Image (cartoon, rainbow, N blue to C red; front, top):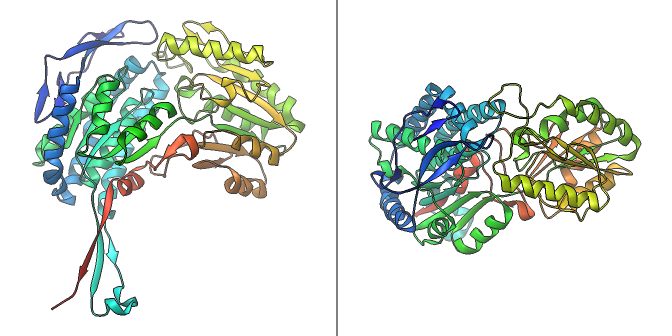
Length: 487
């Protein structure tokens, strides 16, 4: 381990938690602090051979983990929650170091992570079935029928770089709650918090007599990921990341179950009756958090023409409030993207939009290694900054004649994760809920609002399946029907 942003890294097991122990002596790769390029640590890098070992160990753990009582699974989850709480400051510092997100954003990620483990623990008590009135048909007269929910089997969870602790938790905690062993593959750029989390999970499992293979973590490249998702012993693959990679995983994993939480270009509609101050505040809060690297960050703003000038004026008047730079500074609101390649791509997309006729109202340049919070006006629908996921602190604004046209424009996207509408009209609010082709509609709040207990996921190219402990557990369990004819 190296030094992290001037302070010591927290102490946890080194190596990869594969099989019953921790595999050491692997290749390593530097984890880099995005703000200044300093090396946070040299993290272990897994190989295809490690993936095969993890798959064999995970498959062997399916029955032992599936037999764990509800009480034991719940106790493990609550123990992990408590362990996380006891290391809150250290986890936040580590998140800042490996993601480059602002302190405030990392504190939010950590608090949501703790809540997710607590919620998963509570859901253990609700995994049950019901009786079936077989005698509704003559052939079932005198018979007893009921179904239960059983663990689906070995789970592979692949997490994105933008929320490495929270996203790993949304894979691992519901798997444990459902009674499934899980192999987690974190993003290569951000493996450290997931490795530490696995250490805490294994310690909790040991205290309650559960096998350590209840969770394994393996890092590595796309070949490692391909090995994991194509193995026939895997029952389900849960992936959070880009649409292109998710679609490839779905093809590779077939016929295994896939849960895909993919990209988007989330829209925020401003109706002509909206509270424009609140709508502008929502764009400032929702467009630039996580440095814009969030799949439900505000990217497209569609405003009714009657209020366009006033709204844009309010937005541009306040955009300077967002301090950029060092994510360790509590006042910083926007920090550098995960790497230089992401920065170059974003600047290229901004320039492309300008050449196509868009106007840069603010930002569009790098200040203190950070892309300034950027507002683009009148971005053509064909520009990548409008129709693709920019994953950067850039918001594109267009105006339309009315709300109906706005809703149609939201739907003219291959994505469909979250969208929001600002309005004082119940009719408009319910029209949005009815008409928008997305997984979640948010009224008078940012599309990035997510309670970790709600069903979360998208439609169209934004994915399939739902996260949130209750809904992930449903995805990771299968019904088993029992039919009994008493003698």
